[in-house]
Image (cartoon, rainbow, N blue to C red):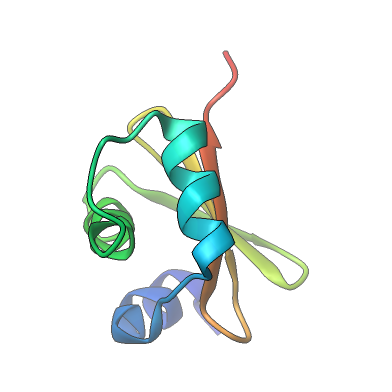
Length: 85
């Protein structure tokens, strides 16, 4: 199974929790509406610069100096944080 295609084919299933929204906004210093956090992540994930990898139950998307963590079974965006240099 190709995790890149699997994730990209299921972008419409991506979601997060209320706590996830707050965590993502805080970690990335985003100043956007709560409803836009998932759309922001979808845009980043579908970017041509995105590097998608999988480790166990989680998928990691490294793009534009941030890492987005997604549970591959539930398509829940767990967190996102700035990439450590």
